[in-house]
Length: 217
Ligand code: AMP
Image 1 (cartoon, rainbow, N blue to C red):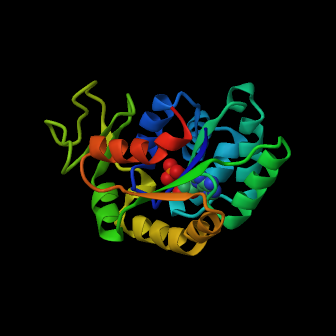
Image 2: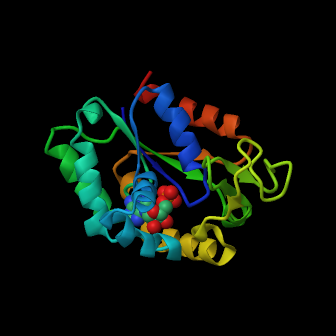
């Protein structure tokens, strides 16, 4: 199965991507994760990407597309993949179509996680990440026992620069301007399937897997 996951920041793409990829036994390719690991390794790509990520802007297409082309050239993607966070612009979508067409394949489905802006702000502004083990807590939904301290390892919790309320509002604008045109792009091609991404994580996963069942299993 060749699958793309789209949705605004905070829709739960990363979490759902993990469950869906393991259910259908395909590799999960998350451009945000690849950028973040480059940032923490201090690579040139990471230094370049960080400026945009911290501001809540998209990393330029030239950088992102090269990185995805490289990742999709690995053998583990030949039977399928789940893309989380790519494409995020129509230009990226066109390049992806061309890349796949060059191998005589195409996307099977684009799953949209649907959630409104206020829910996104509530979810993201409460997120706190452990500096030591990377675990993500939430002030409302999954708070640590002691404020600012990770229950798992005792590490210090911090808020991602791109999770401040101002930056979240900006990321939502970027999504509306640059990414939401993908909904029409894939809708016109008959590839789009939408699921309600509110409520408990397990319920969203179940809805997503049900919506995808006819493409895989
Ligand atoms: P995410 O974890 O998917 O929310 O991505 C975090 C940040 O990485 C985004 O806010 C962008 O700055 C950058 N990023 C991730 N994927 C892309 C993409 N496909 N195109 C441009 N920038 C991206």
